[in-house]
Image (cartoon, rainbow, N blue to C red; front, top):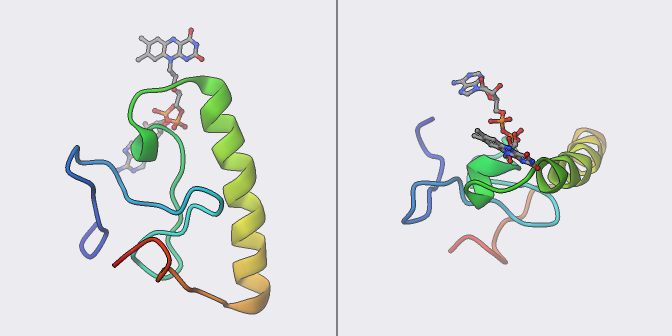
Amino acid sequence: MPDLKLNKRGYIVAEEETGMTSKRGVFAGGDIVTGAATVISAMGAGRKVARAINEYLKWKYWDTSNFIR
Ligand SMILES: Cc1cc2nc3c(=O)[nH]c(=O)nc-3n(C[C@H](O)[C@H](O)[C@H](O)COP(=O)(O)OP(=O)(O)OC[C@H]3O[C@@H](n4cnc5c(N)ncnc54)[C@H](O)[C@@H]3O)c2cc1C
């Protein structure tokens, strides 16, 4: 996806607690963010990101300045 910031290993840069990426309204979690990991960690990310998506849909708040420069 154009405009989506990747790290040097080619994975999507996303804020750990929310899954917010460099593109407004796009969230990511799981192996595409961490690299190959486990089902448990992907499920944990899915849970956090689902909560963050719900908040975003309610408030439309988007600030990635603390982790994307
Ligand atoms: C062979 C193997 C064995 C494993 N064994 C274990 C194990 O025993 N225990 C364990 O905890 N973990 C295991 N893992 C790791 C585990 O499978 C992953 O960590 C976990 O599945 C990651 O979940 P995810 O949702 O991030 O990604 P995925 O499960 O990879 O899901 C990504 C999904 O996105 C889809 N997709 C990709 N590109 C697109 C696109 N352009 N458009 C739409 N959809 C797309 C894919 O088809 C896929 O369904 C194993 C992995 C492998 C490869």
